Image (tube, rainbow, N blue to C red; front, side, top):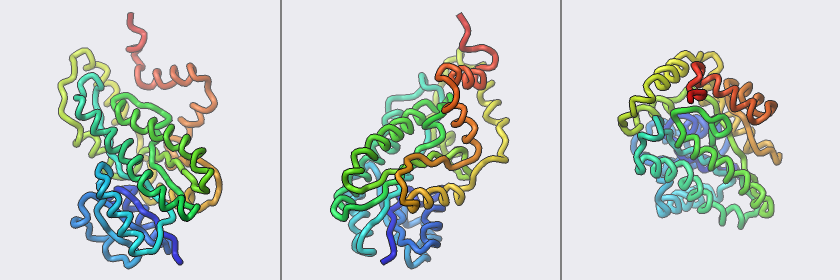
Length: 280
């Protein structure tokens, strides 16, 4: 029997590329999304079931899992990919913006994971792959709430991995860098309009100029990230973290090899080149 994976957030980007990649490798795919009626490509593959799933709604999650098991017999892997980013000066963000970010990126992952665990536990096998981000290890300014949500999933996933070893269930963390998807554009366009205090003007101008100057030669494609996800889920090892994107390799190596304070000063030099952090 072919193996089956359930993927959240499969309507675009890494989620959709992963659905296509696993399908091409002979896997059955439960491609879930909030608006499956808009999907026009995945529905044409006989081994892909496109079905609704809203990660903040328990009934929706249970129904998607039930439909997947009914169609393919069992589920062997879960890819928690659904999520979004919000950006801006933290001080200007509303309470709703912050809570909505955590509802999807953190509690949504927990909701789907908890719902699939009885199935994995019963069969004493399963792999859970959680998409975090390079910023889950390398925090950037202007995305503090998004960074916090990814740090939360990093910690949750590692703790859960030790817990689920007892049930022969593996947990994998995928850390993509900047990726060729519409994620970044959506992060800025979907963010709540805010009025920033004037004191941040110089910092915003310099930081935005830095982001705009970053080259695109090392950006990974969604297909390349999907390949990393496939390798993580199928390699049969106890490896926990997988870097998906050449642009963050050197920065993660710097984090691993520098002292904590040296690394903080390294990032501070990037984001505060004019010494904002040294003002009295």
